[in-house]
Length: 238
Image (cartoon, rainbow, N blue to C red; front, side):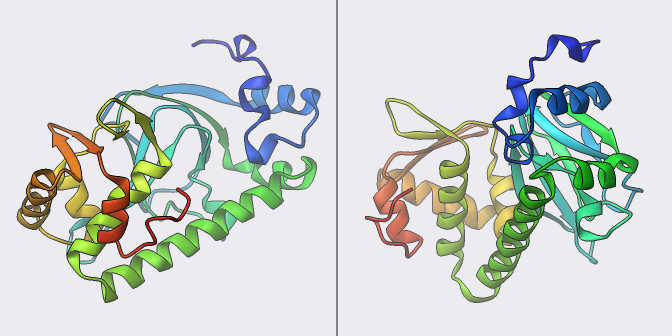
């Protein structure tokens, strides 16, 4: 895509940081943006590199990865279309705190970080919604740390699959299919456990009719049973 003039303002007008803005403001924001496509597996930005840009994911899915002091990779979260990422300025950083890697083919818009202050000061609701997002992500990260410290492996894996199914899935004849490529290795990196353990759990859950997994694919076939494994109320809303 060579020009953003082909992008209608309605494309981002429903996204929280932009939904309070007038069309003229959204047009101004789009005119300041640069579109870019990333192929599956391609890094959008790297941990610790200078945060020179911030991004909006228009299409696709992105995996956020942190590297531990021992060199292990940990999947911190997943980004779906309509979410901002690389917003290091929102937490007072000048470098990216994690890497972002395209799970599938992605289309993003990005802006130079030098425009961050302008966006915050000029556009109604941008700061409020963005800092709300930051707060939610910090809370999510803290909960993840607590899960790693206090929960059994089975519970952690079940909760991870539930979060993904709720965040980004499509309904199929079999159940709720997580709608981006997901391997058992990915799940192990999300939950702080081994590939062997994840494989053992998924195989057992498949025999119980709770999930169905294949090559880079996971379908939750019995949501209430998975909630029970995650120690959540099966009657709770998804």
